[in-house]
Image (cartoon, rainbow, N blue to C red; front, side):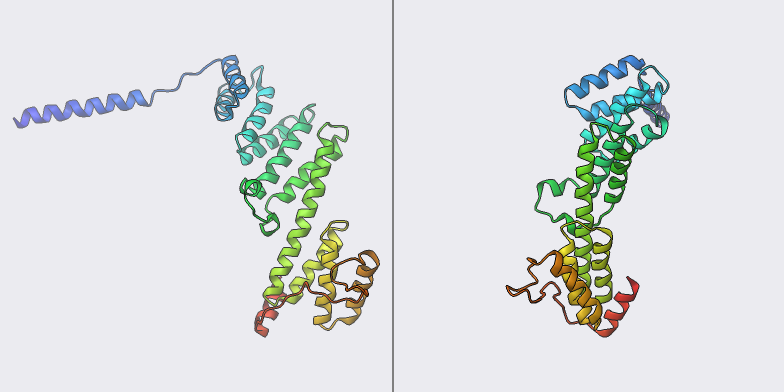
Length: 276
């Protein structure tokens, strides 16, 4: 009986090994044309995950084939539409490096910009009531650089007008984010840090909607910090350019209201102001 049990165990081990070998058999490798046709069919059916899988397999097994360059473009498109923004940005960047003189390089720059932008704000912002200015700017700057490269290298591209509009939106977003951070610093009584952020908006993001609030915030902060000359200078600019701003009353007297302070210790004021 023990001998039979040993034989049975040996048979079971052999069966497990056989099944493992079968399960680890290499996948069927298709021709380049077959991979490409499957990918195109998947994209036509809006099945972008399958399209991505076929295109990636094609690139693995036929990296220098007849359809290689077009497949790289299709991979950018498929990944982006599959909401794989990181993958789309990486594929676009790779295409630009491999084919800088391609007539389709402008498309790669454009999708890279879109992918970087939407990677930063996330899908939730498109569907949920989330204030995008309260989020970290993340890759918004990368998106701006991609759109800027597109506009400067391919000014006549069909994607250039939309890229220019998105650059304006990104600048507005970056400026609003700076004000959001300044407001946070004010709540923490880091007034020097808040003032630096407000001034940064005025200096680096002129002509954005955040500038009037940044100027008004600067006036209040300068006054609180005892810097009256600077406060007067900022007030003159604000009154001359934005006399309808809510910080003025009906007689154009500055009443402020953007700096809402909380009680904090002197140590916190000093530390946060310096570290920023």
